[in-house]
Length: 81
Image (cartoon, rainbow, N blue to C red; front, top):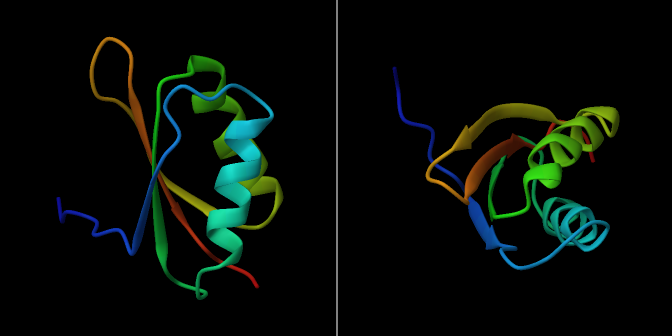
């Protein structure tokens, strides 16, 4: 499988909802359509809520991966302006 290269990365470890989504939404709003945002987080609930919210806003979730005992990586492709 081809490795997805992110255009922008944010680290929101240590944050809880709603701050996790607010930071993610602000980051993707500043990007161009078609670009990929990589989000690193350590709040389990956000690993479910951020992808759902991003899809609700019309973006595509490319990956949700638990990379170790505490951290997740999300890849979100900006699909609409």
